[in-house]
Length: 287
Ligand code: HEC
Image (cartoon, rainbow, N blue to C red; front, side, top):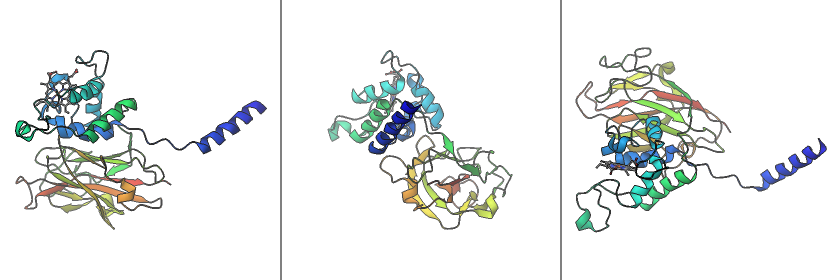
């Protein structure tokens, strides 16, 4: 008992003197890279028998863990880095650095993007962060009705031109001010621009108010977090070098905040406005 206490004490001292390890890379860190560069052939097409750029992060991750035929004994996620480095993938891309030879070919990954995939592999190819927070304000008719009868599903906003279910927002990771790993994931959108924003209240008691082709759910004091470009119908905030959500949203003390995505949907559909929105997500920041 005594010995145990002494060793526990030293373990405590050791913990105090050891710097906190950097947050480990998860699939959330590399999914945007795969969506950006591989979606033309690996989002739902099944080339190479996997869809690592699927807009649904869970489906994409599952496929990244299938056994590779290119690198036997390895995952397809691991083989992805090899085939990027050897110039095979993205297939037909112009990676020579010679603008004459590369003209008209799809773009190649930069060194920073390759390093992100490398870090994910070194950290053990960790899965997407677990979801957190409470989604609310769906376009399924349970709250305010969608403006044109464009009712969506019970997990998204009002229907849009690419999804009868409507665009979906989830939050994942830790909404912790000391160790913020929160990520907002929007899916089921057209490949247009998507503005991620934060509010301080849930509009109309959480039922939402008609806005464009959808419902506005997050209100009060509104902060823009960032505008992303959807690929494979999806985007996320933050990604790459984006600041964390607590920094961009100026959340400095534990508090409840609401989140939503406003996205462009230019095709004629419902209202004259050419935009729609996801459902909202409400969550409480911890110290
Ligand atoms: C223009 C279409 C195209 C693009 C873009 C593309 N691929 Fe592929 N990919 C293919 C095809 C076709 C195959 C199957 C033939 C082969 O293996 O060469 C394939 C196969 C693969 C395989 C082999 C799977 C295995 O079991 O080892 C990997 C890994 C891969 N691609 C990774 C990627 C990654 C990562 C990207 C994006 C950076 C990408 N590809 C972009 C067309 C593409």
